[in-house]
Length: 181
Image 1 (cartoon, rainbow, N blue to C red):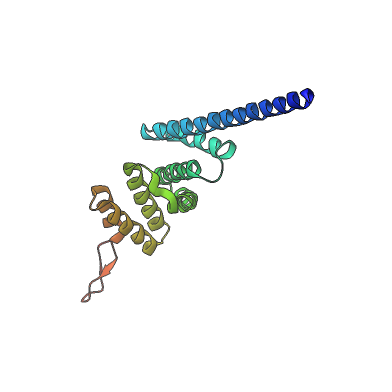
Image 2 (image 1 turned 30 degrees about the vertical axis):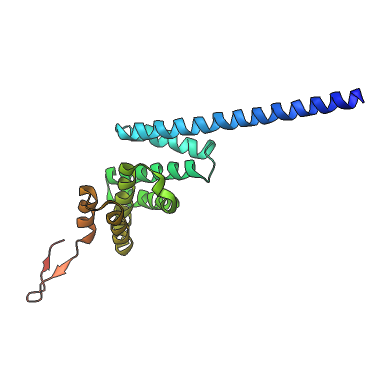
């Protein structure tokens, strides 16, 4: 009877210790993810986008699970970074090669994005709309801008992107000469 009691106690203690180790390691992993996402955002905010891109891609590939709120935040950051890299490209070909990657990550993050801070959400919606616009998906781009307007009213950044996305090539009825862009 004593051996049964001791064995049960040892098993119970082992179980409790195992649970604590799992919880502690899970906490450490979550803390690492949070710190990495914070660091990549800070790097991006101060213009060190290449470093942010490298760190973020490594985190996505190695330790951020491909589901959940941290993955969505990583995708949001990665999409915005790729959009900015596309805008900094030195040729239209390079820009057009980067934009589909940005679009894919915007699409992953989009359904869940309303958990971000407002300034990052506005940036996300603007950059997503411009990505779609530059890829020739003007109707989808206008939907994103309208969504941004519904969420944030007439924020100057949103209105600027709206003006770009809304431009149409108009033709004069009299002379058939293109007017505007």
